[in-house]
Length: 310
Image 1 (cartoon, helix red, strand yellow):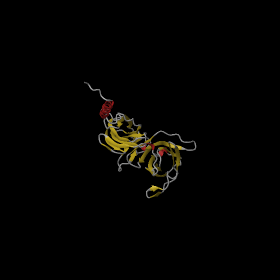
Image 2 (cartoon, rainbow, N blue to C red):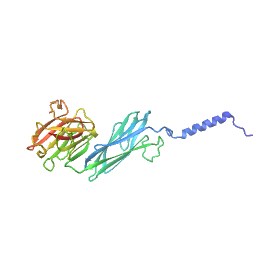
Image 3 (tube, rainbow, N blue to C red):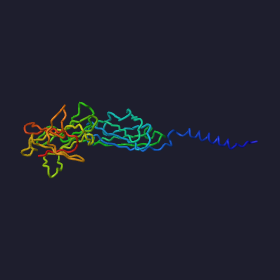
Image 4 (tube, one colour):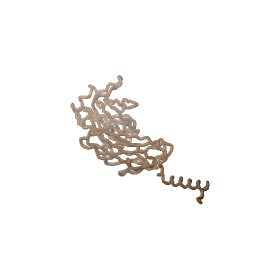
């Protein structure tokens, strides 16, 4: 005679089956999707043709829970070749293993590259994820990708433009053509205040000055670390051909008008130094070079646009 199972037996069988089914489900398959915010930025936005550049990929944990493992995978480039991956935490080889990411914290990976000769732009892509597997890798943990992409333009105008990623302590000067004359009336140079930042300089054209300011010469546009402020200051050197200088302007009385996002200043204070640094900023010093040309060295804490001020 067939024996019917008791209610206790049915319950035991159901519980056992449920446990077995649970064990078959991949770990983390039902985990909530983490609230991660991705970002990307060029360093700098434009580089000299065939030069060194970088993009910075970032990810921010906008969630209440810690991400146990975070990766950047499938980093690829067109228009250049990758020379290094530099994470703010963890390690990078072909894949970046960034470790944990706590709530309200961010992680970045700086992808440094050399642009190919003749490339008009360089494009870099990658994918942040929580599995370490590439796209289509069959991952089941969260199952989410955060793709990132960034382009960097290149410029072949070596007379008026110079730009690159500064990654060597013995090579921090970024400049365009420094020989001035009637066909190149102004030259601009920046001494980067630190390494692992993008820097670009450009002169040419003009920028509007306030009615109370008498500007002259070309505009020098300076970008250091995407517009960051440096409390310790950095140096900008502008050389002006004598053909740019209004009558009566000389090394003793020249001023520089400086404008940036959120502010402006009229720089006239001459620099005095203690331990190799200015006692007060902004400030400038000027000297005659090549006869009647002027070279103005400015110490400032801001990026932005600079023009001569009579």
